[in-house]
Amino acid sequence: MRERGVAFFSGGKDGLYALYLAEKEGIEVPYLLTLKTSIGLSPHWENLSSLKALAENMGKKLLTFDMKYGSKALAEFISSLDVDYIIAGDVFLEDHLKWINLLAEKAGIKSFEPLWGKNTLELAKEMLNAGFKYSIIAVDKNKLEKTWLGYTFSSTRDIEIFIYENPTIDPLGEGGEFHTITLSSPLFKDEFTLEKISVEESERYWWMRFRVVGNDIKNVRVKGHNSRKDG
Image (tube, rainbow, N blue to C red; front, side, top):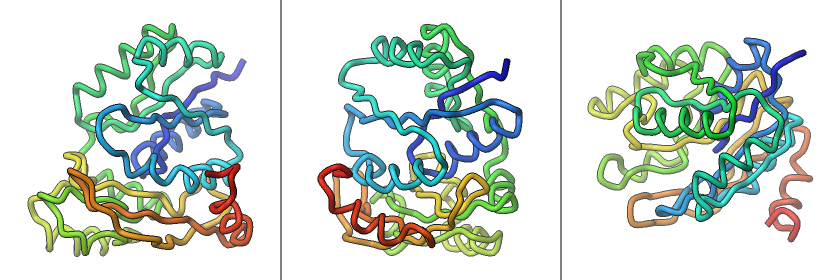
């Protein structure tokens, strides 16, 4: 019987690349799980309608969980899904890796962390060579200028330019320097474009309200973004 998993999903590159690698390993992933953080603002959660568009495009069910209910309740929720794996895209944040492993243990399943310990520059190149394309949707105000919002990585040249301009910033933003939304990947039926709605400021970030628009679902997405059902 084929093993199944649930993948943590923010729309960002790391989690989606982990999902891509899980499916290449033969793990079926019917569920994506987006967390509403109880600690500060999440630029990803604030753009939930766009995450719904990406999930729909992949033919996967998007689930949400409010972390105000705690990790124990999250583990119970995950255990109810009848899956074998929790899939996540941690690279070197050890505390988060430990949390994922503990969560999997409490849910009675296994964790799958295919990016763990990899060189972040090589990993960024690996993602792009696999067909991933992603844009910056939030920057830490103390580390990057807001002019980097919307900067898109579609080739290794884009990484080279970014590193040249920001030599102290991790190429994947693994220190929380920036957050991304994925616009193209082998998982998608369409390539998406990023449409900026506004630039906002929180205690930590400059971040974008945006919509993602796919080639074949443009009209549906624009309408859905403004509908009650999607809001």
